[in-house]
Image (tube, rainbow, N blue to C red; front, side, top):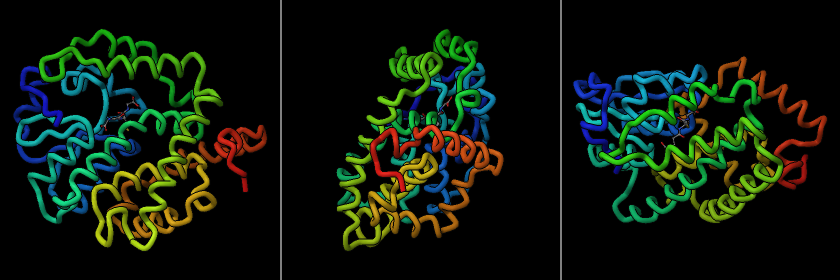
Length: 289
Ligand SMILES: N[C@@H](CCC(=O)N[C@@H](CS)C(=O)NCC(=O)O)C(=O)O
């Protein structure tokens, strides 16, 4: 569990926050996952929106809470937690009802969540290539310099993950997301969804007849990949039915709504990619229907 030490937190005011507080961004996949979990649990929580679009996450106030500059962050009774899957597993222990990580499935769920987290940069790459245009998504040099300069610690140690973030954004600034990078990311997802598709044969949810944390986590990825133009209906029909079932629930639907201007921007991006024959389907080698 990534619970930070009080000494890691230089934005001291959060150490006084009582109850459940979430620092999050409307359009962030990991924030959406956390909000759906909170909705299903019926947990009373206080929102602290942080605007990733204006790069507020590189301001000293936020780096003093999460030196990685990433959302979501949970503050619970003055303790700071980062990494969405760790946050959710922590909350599950504190708020066990309704049970979203059944004890008998704990190891299986932990492994699948690890697989999901390992694909996070692939999801980001496909988002930056097929959902958001570069002029909107690119980080300012001064934001990256602020992240680089920040001396924040994670459990008393210099953070090694920060380098991965910096490398991603510097590469993106230089070359965007290349065809080869996008194809590899899409293909990695294809391999995972082939397994998920098998799990869904003869059952409504990924672990059986009840919703678990795995459904929430993979729902969010599925939603984002659909926005990117990943052909679920064609490649993974069972997954499509499962996704639609979850999307019909208000606890899920209300957290993944994109603002209309953003939908419009993605639609224009898709139109130009279609004309140039470099949609996700083209690049990844899926037949484009
Ligand atoms: N492994 C982390 C990933 C968190 C992450 O990458 N969050 C994204 C939003 S989904 C973020 O804050 N990005 C910062 C940015 O875009 O500047 C988690 O699960 O919490």
